[in-house]
Length: 308
Image (cartoon, rainbow, N blue to C red; front, side, top):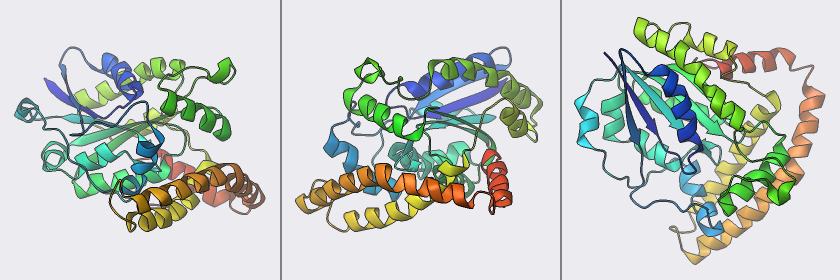
């Protein structure tokens, strides 16, 4: 019997649904699934209020940790042949609960020397969060063997409007009845079941050498070069803001809250003002950088731990 552990944190439930679709075709004869939902000791609100939403930015980006609810002892009673690690991207970084889990003794016990497939359900920019997650998995001595990324397929500025509607309104509905539904589409969520059989075959054969190649051929990862560039540039600026705000005091302090308001305005300017300029620069430099862009796409779609 092959034992599979599904570790995840899903604030809205979207990621849980993606994982359910994958595991329904992965489970069956000779494969047993165990679920581990990561829970913060103090749950985050959903829908978000603005203060809470922006308040988690510095600690999330700086990859700090928060207290987590205890994990049931029964989870540690098995030896797992494969771990599916489901995560979201918060502020270009793995979510605060997932970062906290990955720095825990529990993660060291569960992931060390174990094949891990990461499953990411996010808005659109995920490559640099993946690099950070990769560093954590390397530190844990886990074997990263597969990666699936499902994102909002709509253009960047449309997805910004719809995700704000969802995060602050709490419902995955069409804003004003005009805009598309936010997040990963229903078709993409349901069709995630197609990844289960190929993962199951790799698991039963205990061979993951060609797994990511097969997953990519099935559309598991699609790299958009402009979003890679935007992600890289935004990480530099987010780093400056995160360090600045963290120095202003602990969460909830008035001075820190004032700077979080400034960050909110900066974020709006970056999305609506800076991002279009970055896109123009990307178009101008596309031909000179064609070979580099092609290598980037191959790298981020792979499970390589070394940048080309």
